Length: 335
Image (cartoon, rainbow, N blue to C red):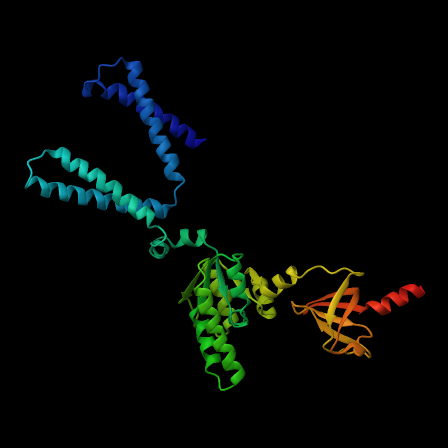
């Protein structure tokens, strides 16, 4: 309501100013026409206010900087030209306006290239406009995060703290060959993500020397930046949730994307090994889901059609229990 009253007052003042200042500028129009001109001028000011209010503050800043730089350049060039060409002030004014417009337009078009500097000048605005995703060491080494980024489902800025890079370096320099391979794989995954145009990777210097544990540091970074942690570590997931920090768990995403299998459906699997119970066989789907085949030991090393009997969802993943199709048909026929 206050804004509406202020806008009405502005229109009234604009109309009064037009009536009062009109004769001073030699305007011979009757006062009703001067009131109309004043209202139009006030309306243009309100329209400008509405348009400016929709622009981000960093775009206003760069537009103003470009415009002022263009005006200064135009005035300088116009003054220099008057030393050689006898012209009036109109040329200087025209050059100043043209170059002022050009300067504002150029810097507004270069907004993406100035994002880094804008983030430093307006850190709060940048933090609100972009939700940071902080990567932990385990999710980098595992590598599925790169596949997700390539699909375009994950956008924005991925933050890799310096202490995560140091941990990767320690793993890559380990005397254990397996750990050394894992560390090198982590660096390869990071390089692959950096080449993806759909996401930005930012190496952040934010650290908390008083905190030793990397998991606690990740939580503090997420709190400071107002971001989310991307991980596949169950313990980090729980600690972060208890600390009030949002988490994106790659394993939970993978489980959510697995195809739904209902009892009674047929599947074709390859029995790879024996199960824990007597006579069982074990197979795996392409996504790694374990398929337990009852009475499947005799099909070891073979492919067989099976029928789903039940599905068990655990914290470690999903298990599908099946029976060979032939035995299921026999038992069904007997029933």
